[in-house]
Image (cartoon, rainbow, N blue to C red):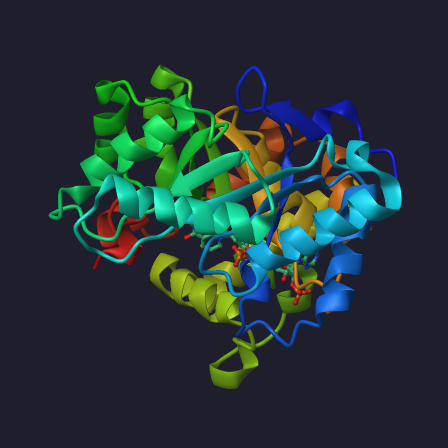
Length: 339
Ligand SMILES: NC(=O)c1ccc[n+]([C@@H]2O[C@H](COP(=O)([O-])OP(=O)(O)OC[C@H]3O[C@@H](n4cnc5c(N)ncnc54)[C@H](OP(=O)(O)O)[C@@H]3O)[C@@H](O)[C@H]2O)c1
């Protein structure tokens, strides 16, 4: 499949990514049983079809190990050049503790060894508790690893505007912040996007499909409850929808998205992802992949077959204006992890 040029972008002058990034939280358990061989096959299928960038974390079960197996297999079967365009962004998510240089170096070495990669394309840093100022040491040591070439780039995940700005003012080179950003959760638009514009930081958006809720599957359907929310992702985002509004308003949104999608011969998922990608501060949207269980490659490629116009935005915004302000209810980006 040949994706258009627009499906790629640069996060900085050297870092080229696919704007739809494959998310690997879904291999970590609680999203269905993942068969390793099938997962590796599916990783190849994504890459062969132009979805060349991967998002993972040290705590996403076997995700980092899968990267190593996948890369080694490609080197064996198709030579080193077949890895050229591929990017793997992992995360370091330390539990609250005293941070030393040794601890940081050791954690990053574990990821490098697990992934079989000498220089990591990007390390995204998460911190649980701002009262614990050890995050300042952590970012300084990580930035040193960037300077010495152990990391190509440094990113954040779930940092709020205030603390992202704190790092930027210290002169730390932050390429991106990975945050929840979707038609349901538009908190980044209020504070984070203006900061990103000011400092030329990109956002990597997750939750754009609300785990699959923002799709035809839930259009005109009764509210799913309890075990009907069969992945950790569906439960997480159903909870977010409950805070945003209610199932009736969500149905109104799905119906509106369906009308727009039909106009362009695409699906609700395409419109939902496109909405986020239309924001120039967004580098990429991370879409979760249940490797070897389900696969949406062809459909997701259609995200690049159209764009939303002013009328579409107005129609969508008419529905969204009836929802609650999640910034008031939850706080800024990532605060859902800190309360
Ligand atoms: N930094 C953080 O704190 C954080 C938090 C959450 C997620 N993330 C990252 O973001 C990634 C995205 O995960 P998410 O939990 O936010 O889920 P998501 O991307 O909102 O939803 C993924 C699910 O959407 C469905 N889907 C995908 N494409 C579709 C299409 N074209 N049509 C219909 N359904 C489609 C699939 O469901 P089925 O498999 O059921 O078909 C898929 O499993 C994660 O893997 C992770 O990398 C990061």
